[in-house]
Image (cartoon, rainbow, N blue to C red; front, side, top):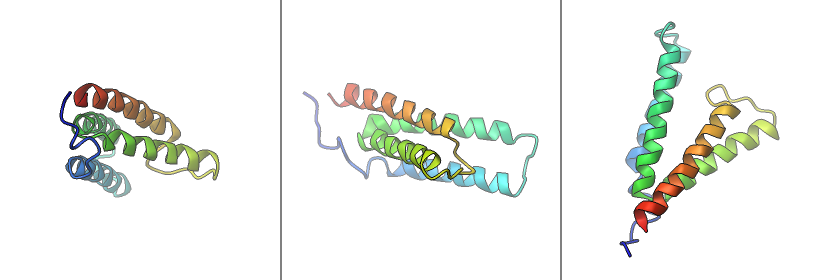
Length: 114
């Protein structure tokens, strides 16, 4: 059996959550101010790839990362379906991708921590 001390540690994922927030904030700033109009799709897909890798690496450190991604993905799907609120940054398709990454992260957490 491996050490389970930091299985649900929040301190272990704070750098990962901060990186995700910076990526989303940077993309929003670039999108709103219309910087790099020809490159905005590449910035969007690059940001999605970095966020996916951040969820995976955060999942290897703590079980809270996939749980947090699962909560965020379900919250986005809930608000888009029930309240008919369309968020400008995250679509329901992106929410499904976040949910897939959360389940992959749960599998990685189980493999690494046990």
